[in-house]
Image 1 (cartoon, one colour):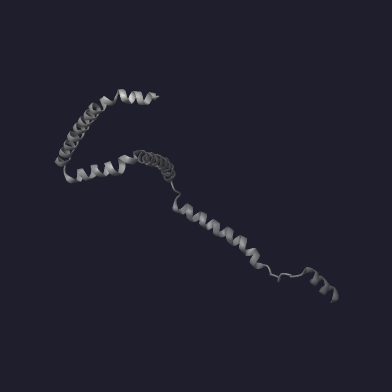
Image 2 (cartoon, rainbow, N blue to C red):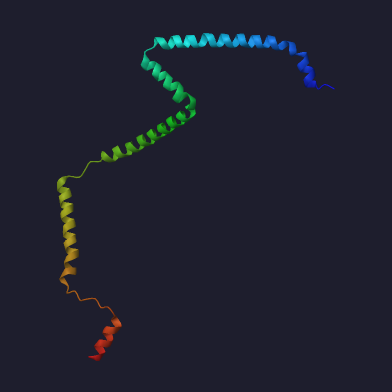
Length: 142
């Protein structure tokens, strides 16, 4: 008993040579004209252009999605940087205080520092007690 596959193959066996001939003719036509036209167009252009096209075809085109993603990230980073630089320039546009005002503030800070440090240095500094119980016992003996 023959399977349906065998019956179909036997019926269409005579079409194989015609299909092979038409396939060969289509492939020879497609590959014989296209490379010569492309090769002729490339030979007209100068070598830097040919090198750039070749680099584009070999490096960029196969992984164009990755390059598009990288470009999108750069655009986002540029936008963030641009947004941050605007706030910094706004902060720089604030008028600065004058030199006499800065000198006056510095003098005020120096005065306050001397007031805070002077009372601590004028007192007699006692040596710190290491053991308060021992000093209490020593004072009772005397």
